[in-house]
Length: 184
Image (cartoon, rainbow, N blue to C red; front, side):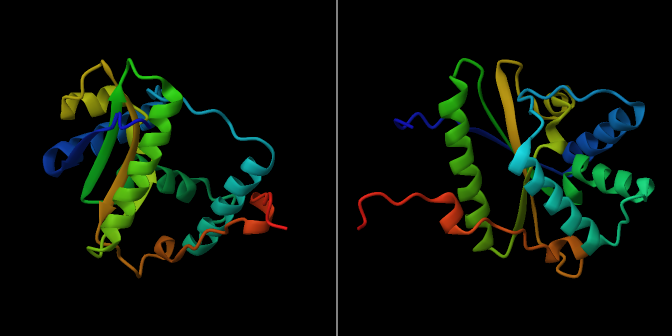
């Protein structure tokens, strides 16, 4: 918005990413409550319904039964490991910026990165589990406390044989999300 270009991008791979993945899993296993820079709220209504439908689709593809707590926990750990991608893009903003406009801008650059990655045969997953313990991310990346870590993108060459990579999430039809005015 207004050419502010608020995003700050940190690309992580190798030992730094391995350390983040390891420490994330240790924190998760210890029962430490995540403390993200961008706290999320629980979805309600149709938004929660869409989230649940996606999880059902995904777990069916992965062969994870609802009652299989061990496999569900393993899947959750994958998210904290950036889905085992060889690189992650972490997007942050200066803490002084107003949240609403900077979040819009972060969304646009995130989508642009993901679309550009397709041109190189790369797969991406916009996700927040890998950054739910921002102190860990800061420890290995040097992102200062004055920056809010907003989102991350796992990136790498997809393994098309992996069941989760066959997921095609359902989308609402245009008619249910669009109001047309003045097109009589």
